[in-house]
Length: 125
Image 1 (cartoon, rainbow, N blue to C red):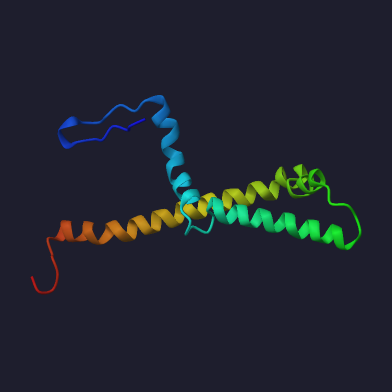
Image 2: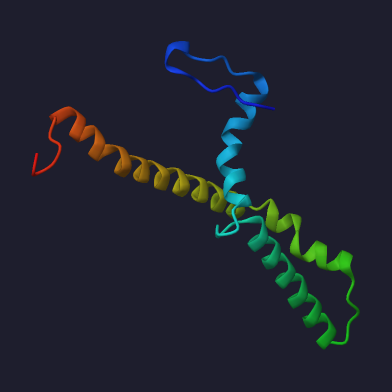
């Protein structure tokens, strides 16, 4: 699906319902798909594989059978996933990312806004 581009003479383009629902997810998708990102799909998959391997190795050393269903229950425990601290961690992550985005956005736009308002283009001009 192609998204409409806004031009100067066109005014505000109307967003479709799907575009409205998808637009907040674009930054998250971009973060998850970039291989250099700390929280990319690749690094999360590697962390998941390491967790499975560690649990399987631990069970094998104790002489117990390695049951995949038990490993999945151990890693994706409802008690852990639905705990209040998990939701607090996610909220702190979202708030921190939003704050970081606001700070970086301000740092990028503030000098250009100051130059535009004062008319000062630098020392030599």
